[in-house]
Image 1 (cartoon, rainbow, N blue to C red):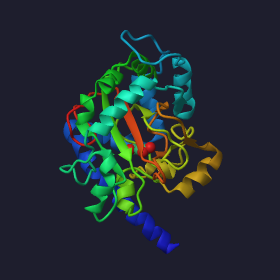
Image 2: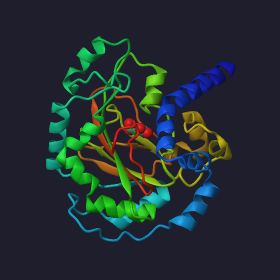
Image 3: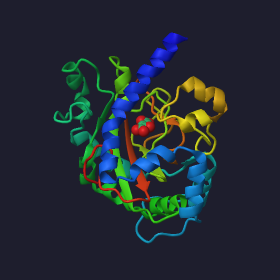
Image 4: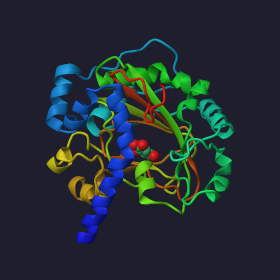
Length: 311
Ligand SMILES: O=C(O)CCC(=O)C(=O)O
């Protein structure tokens, strides 16, 4: 028991240290962020904020091009309100191909060696120079050089779902793309850093919405994304009052029940939306690398991404 507590405490410090630089940047960018960080995790205050400042709205058409066909925007918003997740927002094959071509021909970077990029096919060479394997490597602001990704940021289907769910004009979107690599030499801190195998919720803003797109096929062994249905609406006091965003899996299983846990699998192009206030996690790839794109829509203004890079 006391060993469990020690492990939990160590992991708690890992989490705080790993997220502190992002949090400091959020505060620098927008000092009122600290209020959201402190109070935005309690359901009563979140509901109050929703009622006062932004109610859900039926998805209205947004002018502009879209690459999506047959997405039921109203069903997506309903799914988000009820469960925190919505499916069926899949990318067409040519868009997947364009993004993969970009990703395979541009260097990606681990967070701890941002001066040393490598092509994804060269991950073994990158690992040979390190004490631990790279489990996640990002494109940072270079993603914006990819025309297909730039277009997705303004895609009218995504904008419409985001405006409806966030209840306001979407002011900003943060974009990230990264590889998750199969890895053997892995530290707990690296897992926390890459949000792998650790259930947590995000505290990036009062109301944000993420769209994720798998750009490679994802089976059980290729690092699927996990989520807990409805965990944005129901939360134990202990989880609301804790300053950390991560919770042990066993605690969440006994509170929500295993039937609320979903593992998201799918072919290249599979897209889904997530309210990042639900408990969610990535998982370590065992077989093949996974390439994933994330667009996070925020109804408040911000100028930096999660890593302090310009949007
Ligand atoms: O890798 C994933 O699927 C999840 C990543 C994540 O949860 C995060 O970065 O907050």
